[in-house]
Length: 136
Image 1 (cartoon, rainbow, N blue to C red):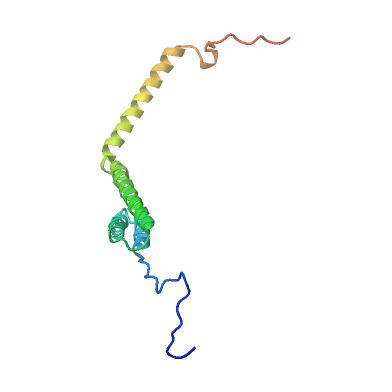
Image 2: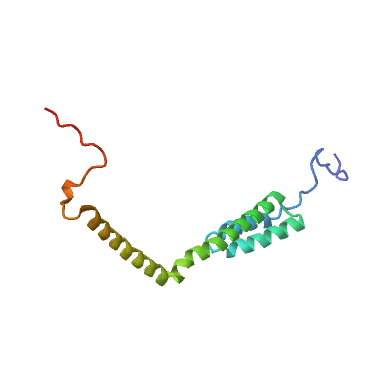
């Protein structure tokens, strides 16, 4: 081989593969991180996933997964934040309801006790089924 001749690349090999974009992977990680950050990371992951999908750089599967996970995490936090915060805002109303209900249960129990036994001791209350036969 002389100096003027350059070796040709092997058949089937491309000259240089374009570098893969890491944006879809970052988007997926941000979307998952949104579980720990009350959905803020999921918003960033959702935006990065849409950008990665629109530009066509990197894996479209990862970008789609980032969009789906980001949307689910945001939806999760839209449901969970009100559910977790509701008892804090309604604390006084819940306490009052529990207190009133407990008083009503105590009154109903006292009334049933007075109605069912009267002057008889509790041990002699009639059974709702026939008493078993005594052996021997």
